[in-house]
Amino acid sequence: MLRETWYTLIDFVRTFGALQLFFLRLLINSPTIILRRGGLVVKQVYNAGALSLVIIMVCGLFVGGVLGLQGYSNLSKFNAEDSVGTFAAFSLLKELGPVITALLFAGRAGTALASEIGLMKATDQLSAMEMMAINPLRRVLVPRFLGGVISMPFLAAIFSVVGLFGAHIVAVNLLGVDPGAFWQQMQSTLEISDINEGIIKSFVFGVVASLLAVWEGYNAIPTAEGVSRATTRTVVITAIAVLIIDFMITASFI
Amino acid sequence: MQQTRSVELGTGLFVLLGMAALFFLTTQTTGSDNFSGDDAYAVTARFENVGSLKDRAPVAMSGVTIGRVTEVRFDPEALDAEVTFVIDSRYDQIPDDSDASILTAGLLGSQYIGLQAGGSEFYLEEGSEIQFTQSAIVIENLISKYLFKNDGDAE
Picture (cartoon, rainbow over the protein chains, first blue to last red):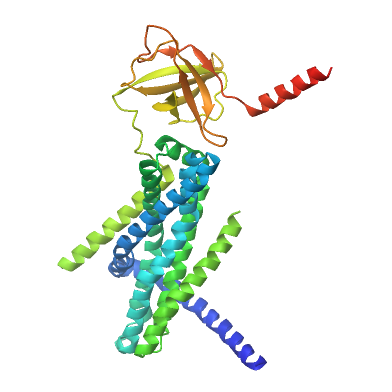
């Protein structure tokens, strides 16, 4: 029993170390790909970012709407419903925007990446590339990783803005909060550092989510079952990692 | 070729949208200012103390919003605050001896300007200045006044 736990622990540390080395290899190969094969990255920004727009915007709108409703019903008990804008902006910019975007990103783009790479491995496409002296890490993994990293901050920003409009629609247009007070209170409380916190978070989450998706796909057991397991693990591990890292970043900002 | 073009177009649109969103977030611009257009007239008022009154705070009469604050500035010569606000031109029959006071919406709410109608036969118009004003209530002053009064009673 003790022995098994020990081996599991050692195994975990080893995997973690391998992940760091993998991350370094991706980073080292990134500049060449950006400079020489920018088109590949653009295609992956399209896959990870542009194709995720619909889910991000719809979810953002309704998350913002919920914030407007909840904020109004709770703040109006203190006669402070004018602060709904501040409430929604703080929640969206600092927490919900980056975190929910990262979770949706893991579900929408991360799974696509993991299963795509896993299937390429299962059908020996990666081995074929190696046979042709093409480095699959450079040709397949790096563009997908970079595409995710570039897309995430934009997706999170779009999520936050759409969410603000959702909150505005619910609070101002449906519940009758004064639009001037909604924006004025938001602007007088919100500082540029709050926005920076959100941008930093979304960037870090972008790195984490893309790295884990690419890693899981690359290390998938090359069978149908292995690929499906890698896809599931991508979502689970990304969700756990994002929430833990979110706590750490928030703690370091306070 | 056609497919590459649509991918590039989609990516470009996505990145532009993202940048627009970031720009919106950092500048926090607002498209909801209903009173800055042509159908409004500007009025000024001077206050000893404006408290935490900000741009775009509402101007209300009998509790109904009829305008917006457009500028709060300190006048270095008269040593007081000059507040400019616009009133919707639908409400063009406000007596020119009305008084303006800075009030707070609720206990924690934001500050706004409340207008109280006067009895004059002349109306406020573009560029007129409100003569009778009442400053924001500063809570420290209230408390010290209260303490001072209690001291007086004790003696």
